[in-house]
Length: 239
Image (cartoon, rainbow, N blue to C red; front, top):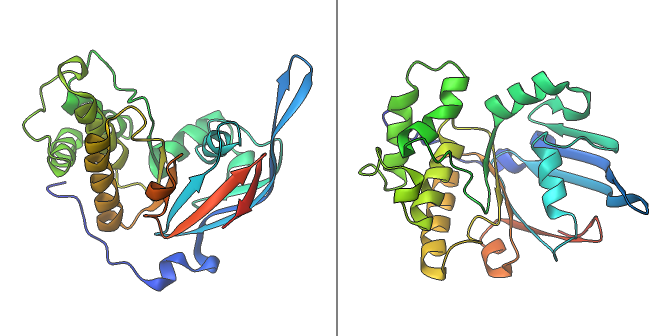
């Protein structure tokens, strides 16, 4: 990958009949000391290809649990969840791993970089897992796209928080996944650095034509998306 590809966007990308994410009566329960806890209580959701959707809500409202289900990191307790043509509740662990490899990029609040790997090696990891021979060339291009072409050989401990999040963003988009999930991506950054990271995030979203779901406590940040959803008590309250 010499450059991050650019894909024209169209109205058809966000049409309800072309949903990348389709959830129906999606439920999620976990065992607690006093019995089962209902975290998601029947989510109906459609997100079209190429959309940017902001998801807001108080802590404990179910935002991160929904992200974990969309990423195939947790299994639904009920209902159906289809992402990128895959019914996630029917996939075994190996198939879920392949789903994440082929369809998904995730940016977390905590950067989750491998401390013993350089920036270049961290970004190349998902491509190496996919058997890509051009893993390091594409990783270098992705780092250049987030302004870190001069930091390829640096380890996470040698980078600032903003630089580490840029590495995490490059890793999330290096395979040009159809779905990008971002969970409070500026939560560990100061205001100016967070704004720089978000500018990069939205710029890459536009250039790649990917679908973006952004979880945030910041209504102003969510408002930069084309649509904003609010979660309350395990349900989507508005959209």
